[in-house]
Amino acid sequence: ASGPQPPGPRLDAAARAHAAAEAAARRIEEGADPIATTHAVKAQLRATGTTAVNQAAAAGSAAAATQLGARQLLWVAERDACLTCIALAGEIAPIDTGFSPDITYGDRPLRWNDFSGRPPRHPHCRCHIVPYLGGAQDQAAADALQREARRSVVRGWSLPSESEAARIRAADRLLRRGVGLPVSVERYGHQAVAAGRFPRGRALPQPPAQPAT
Image (cartoon, rainbow, N blue to C red; front, top):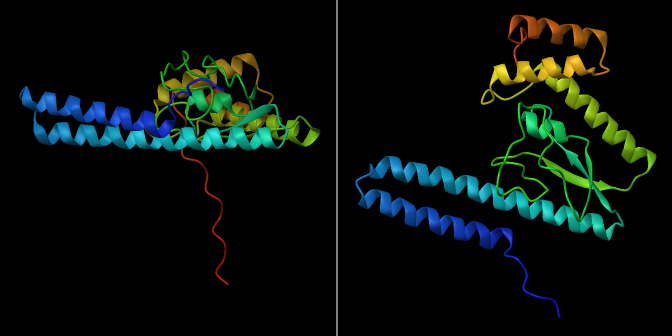
């Protein structure tokens, strides 16, 4: 018979929620502002719930990959993901060991105790994983994800919550290393680094609106 299993994401989230509520009650008893403390706890619980849902989704994806006969997983990130997640885009890792916590385009690896080797990489992470079967089509998808990740860094596509200075430093490092992108993209990246900002902004370009039928 198998031994005791570690707590799942739902139980883990419930334990953290209980601990947060108890800590808030203690802070209020010690004189903390009740309204501000309540708002802080609500934000923490929202992050905890999102993390638990993402962890459960990743576990389900890994189980589905195993049923398909895959031994590896492919990391998929949004084009305006943070410097840690965008560096993981297109990475391939064994199902049983997961992805490295040291991968990043940022100044230093992001340390987060809840990272299990699969998404989420951090609170509010939007990444997901898909099975990697190793064929030519899967490898082409991985290569495309990595190429678009490099384009995103050089182009500066990111959320307002992320430091533009950090994105500029990441673009500079990547350009010095060599990115293999179109000349126009690399030229724009060099101009942004020289200026210390991304002249066209950091929002993802929106597709043209479809004409009404």
